[in-house]
Image (cartoon, rainbow, N blue to C red; front, side):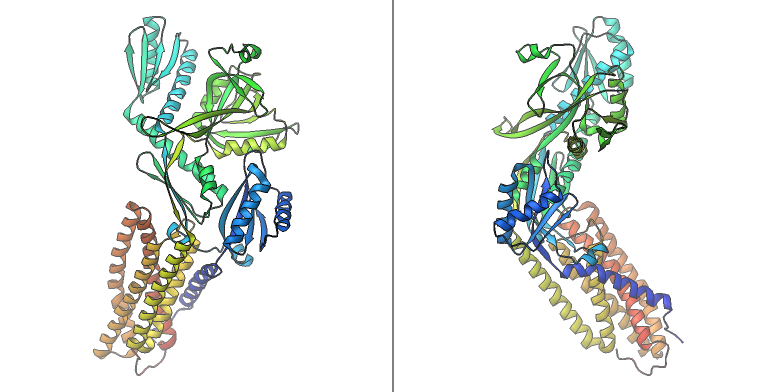
Length: 614
């Protein structure tokens, strides 16, 4: 008999629809207002802190639903937004500056469902509310840092090659190398040209060789500065507990940061605007630190205080910057003493190897540098940043170091953990400043959700009513497939880590509802034609599905390609629309062709049918 389902196809439909329905389920549970506590510098979130938070809120008579401790963070769930604001203010006062206390919205997914990996759809800024920042990277600082790196590389390379020079000095957009004689200059120029293909060398007066970056290298420096800052900003956003933040490049030197669900703009700005970097320098043992403290600092050295306010005399020459660190972990050495294991990229490993080869047994300092914005602005109207430096660790070099090495001489395991966190967080290539800030209130986001849901529900209701009246029993089958389609879209959007539902995305769902029904209309009209041509009901069903398949496939493939182009070239709302559109096309193809046919075969297939209700 025609139109009989193989067992595998029926099981496939059941598994796919049930699986998507299971992962769509978290969306009906909603979210809790929550206060999130994470550790700042020199602090750690422990279970003892959880007890302290609980006691503080109980003493202040602040109602809480429950307190959770996970992933080195504490999440306090409260009944409403007023209680959330009260709890945040009280905990900020009680815990001080050592901890970040931020307001957030936390999914209220049941534990059994969360253990299966279930989580609600990530909502965009326009639906959930939150903050939008446009940040600008200080490219002048990025170029200065690149020039400092080139200056250090020139010194090391010329010294290893045995070429004598007088001075190596970085100036605006170039590095000048002065030599003792013309022979040394010519030899150095030949050597450095072959070694640095991305630099342009020009011979100047007074035996000076000037090195400048090529246009391609300048473009690479700017692009790397933005990309590295994007990576570090994403790490910092994790402190705010944002499930799906948007951090992406805009233009040549700007970064867009969107934090859905975040209501504490002051704390978000504090974390994102904190610009920090790391440097490794040798401790100056040739000169007397007491002379330096009395005002006689050697030209090639610098006094920098450590965490306890004790001055350390360091060489100005930077051995390595923190942007070469790819991983850092705390642990203990063979004697049970605390240490930090560091992994560098290949370029950083080569620099560290060259710089430590002749410094075995000498102390090396790790310097933490922070750029804080002042109220002053330069001639271009950009904020002026003030530089703060602090020695966070001094350790003795035991052997020549490479891409992987350990920092020892650390006082305690806690200090080792703190140092590893600082190193692992990464170093911003250049300071950044917030040039634009927008806040979308949660009430506006809630209104957008309600209006969007109304559009989807009314659109579905009208389509379901039309199909039921016009196609009778086959309309019921189409309606079941249509509901399954929406459930699958929600389930898939919830499963995909990077998918975010925006207001245009909801428009994409409404459009998909119409397109899904369109495929059923083509199939059902084809079945009607086959019946009018005198075919039996079973033959009409069989030929109707087979004949309409190519038309449905062609129409959906062209629309999917359009959605793919929108996703590739679009940003923000356009991306949100294209994601739901492409997912909707895939699910509507599955439901219109496979689910509908499976249901039709279960009801009418494999038996004698005199008449079809279509």
